[in-house]
Length: 408
Image 1: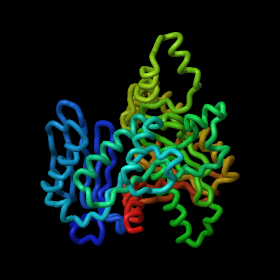
Image 2: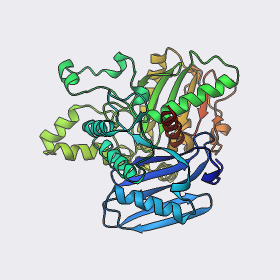
Image 3: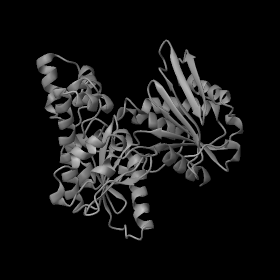
């Protein structure tokens, strides 16, 4: 992406992604994808916060107290000024907010008013690690930009219309209905963006994509898979929360639900302690003491047996989902890898697709080993299934949706 001055843009969107102790931001043009500046504020609420911004070759750091998200937004505005960008003069037409959980209420990007803001807060019961932080970010940004439309873009929206058989757990119906227990999914903005980009690429090449059968593998520290048929999501790996599904950096993914009760009965762990173990102390971190795949692959090369086993467990879970989703789709046209691990760790892609030649999936080792920030084909020419690496761009997707709502 190129960098140019915001004052040259016809419309500019500020994208905010608030975590419990962090706030990521990006100022961009949703039409061209040009990014003017991006950065992050971290350690919000701790004794000493820190932040940084990059705008082309210009960078600026910050270290100091950031007691809450309101102060974090003030830090953001000061950082923009330090790199020569005035947010007041940047032609911002909307602020787009990433919100993880939209429940059954929100299946589209939504203009934020008081009732929407309050409902997002209430849905924190379904996403206690994410929605409260999003509300903090919304409140902080509204305080600074009260006259600009603010738009919530929901991670769950792409999966809101999953087939009933896919979204419904075999849990007592009365309990499930009363407490809104169903599969909501996550990373939906990424899955929607990537699957649409794949379809557009193939359509531009003259292919009919009306019946296109895709599997998208969003593999980052958090990881999820989706099955997409003709542009519609029909299955996804994350569930009521982002804990279900694939093995992740610090999350277990799928486990026997009775492990909760087992740890409580036999070890005396509280619900909060168990939740911490499953979400923050398991996954690759819990298996081998590392969650960064650069460290893991280096350890494997040095003969670390536990790192090797962790990699095998990670890939084994991926293969289970790949196979089951191909059957759910009734066939398979495209597999797409995206996000940090999916885009940058060829070893994972190679291990996952190894031995699947009988199913028409053939990897080109040389193409798989290439490093690039561009969309690329990594399958062999004689592969029946197209295999792609396609960089996700959730910020651009949020910006485009926010602009659509602001102009409506």
